[in-house]
Image: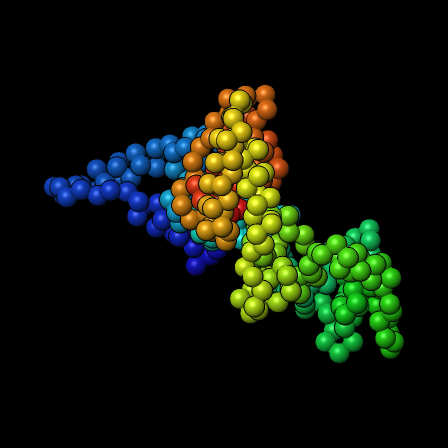
Length: 325
């Protein structure tokens, strides 16, 4: 079976399974064919762009949300440039490539497959040529010499120190990296032991989830739930509670009302400091359209409404709610 045929079959199963069937008298072949054509001609609304498209131009995620072909493909291609969208998902459920690839060309599929290899590689090597910086797959790295050859520009990189390849010599001292690590230590930042990214915790619990999906303790850097550090910092929770009350306070809020609200939010955050946003979000509409809302995940501003988690009060846009969280 070809790739395209297999994809259509998989998509058809998902779509048909959602249709309600009713018992009734048997139909002729012509009647069944007419019903099938009628179903295919029906239009559905895309959950992302809200445009209506025929059934054949739609992709149905596992959660039941429907995307038009352009939005589904756009989500997959966006994930190749922004790791926070990987794997492409809706309502926390991954969307298989098989559901979307019939709407993608060969180059787009190849780009997504390469990004998949990159994101699933724990210790990544990137081209040391600053004008290139392409990801070098593991199969382009010589096991014995640690020589990584970029397929794009041909530059050879040491997969150990990530600088230019140096034959038969120890890795040179990286002064810039050393200064960055010293600064991180002085500022109390933490370093992901999987991808070596420097991360800063502004608010919330000490459970960190890096872009590379590694989970660790912000206090000591050890894999999450493998240390005796406190799960959260009370001072950070209090700062977050003050930020939320200040953000959402209605105009003319009295001092005692603010104190009561602050106590309420603080208590809620103590209970939900490791919120997984499993409950339904509520829509919060803006009484001052010019001000708008800021999505706390992508920083985009929205002037109509924002989605707010009922447990931890985080504000997110529709896009991040479906595809990022």
